[in-house]
Length: 334
Image: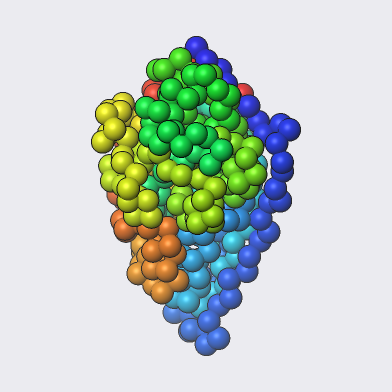
């Protein structure tokens, strides 16, 4: 079994994102309901600049406009999302503190870490889930031109050193790369980051040979020609990279090569059900707001967020699918 996971170690470090205050509308609406009657904080457990952060800011702006209350987006990256999640797990369950994270924080991390600092099932209820869309696999321009799809990439990786970027331990990118290592006898080094933004910075600097993530976060590299797509690990192609075939189109049928997951808006488990329902409705509606539509379009997201009841059902489905997959790969908890 190949154990090629590392931390960032000697690679260049990038600064973490700072908090953002999303301003409430100038005309404060009358507060007919008890909630909300003060600012709402959304903790994003990854740095500013990636998909998780972008959706939180845009949707948070919509919630602010709809409620007349400020929405504070507070970036708390670290430990593959565990630091920010643990902070929200300890927060009062009063509807004023939420977590916006990737689903891997609540699912994969439980078998990737010996201790989390929280219990995903007991400490949280998931308010809404937003599809993360297509997350293409790209390679750096320094790789030979003939490396243009998964088959040629595997052939290259068998004979050359490859650092493969993952935005978090146990993420879809991590599972994808580790599955390549296991199934094809590769020794790629999977480099773990605190989020997408620092990962793409290193990719642009040539510190990584391959990585996987959201098209918008890597867009500057695509425009400059620093990276090129080799696969869309999804059911459909990425709108920004329409010429890049899906993994299945290339003959890679293993489910690990077709990513499923979403961005989770979660609240402390004891948060009143009526507040969970209202915030769920606000989050779903945010996708149709002006800031929400702009952000969804920039990341080429077409699926509307799942409401509370639906995302909780899908949460159970993903746990049954992804946890055994990680265990089968032999990825050891840290």
